[in-house]
Length: 170
Length: 113
Image 1 (cartoon, one colour):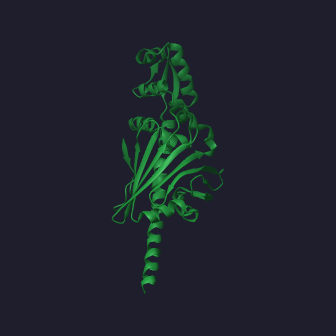
Image 2 (spheres, helix red, strand yellow):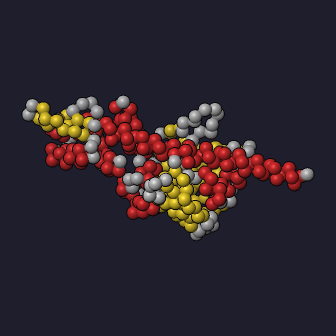
Image 3 (cartoon, helix red, strand yellow):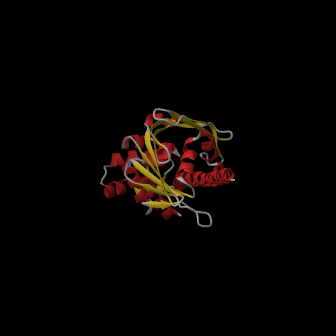
């Protein structure tokens, strides 16, 4: 199932969310800029700080370290004012400038759920860049155990069923 | 929230919740329709009740189980937020990219001067 993000107005680039299997989620989006700029925005901490935390939802990035090279690690600490902060962390497995990043991702409060492997692929065409963000989770069991942030990514099937269910209750 | 998800993540319980959409039912009725034995159904209903997903009401000789939509609505809103998070991030990224492009262009022009 493909779900599209809701653009507020005007010709926005659409975000798609697609559950590829029990363990995989694919997010796609296009950006109006060359791949090298998009890649920089994903890999340079001072730039990551500017977009990664969804400010409009009241979330801010408290710490952002990213040592972008194979074997290097990253850690993003984020939170809402007055609430306990949380962190995502992981290690870079593949770094191909301007086109591909592979990294592990652990939501620290749910460490026991295991690490996901995230592959970000950038392809540039006519000055625009298409991003494919693919997340692979370690096992169905990990997903089933991963309520909280892990579940955000994993339980698309349940979510799809749930949407139908909720719609019928309105 | 996590309780709601944990309760629903078990397939039989999810089927019970789906079945109860059509209206209140007794344990034996649920068991027959979903081909589960009574102790299993009772166990699942207890978990669903603890998660606030069902209510029980005594009717004549039977205890009838009824769906409570509030936790499902709350969960749904929370799930929707996941999309909102990425949409919000990407919108901020759009702005940053536009700014970086402008900077690049400005530097490019300076160089050619």
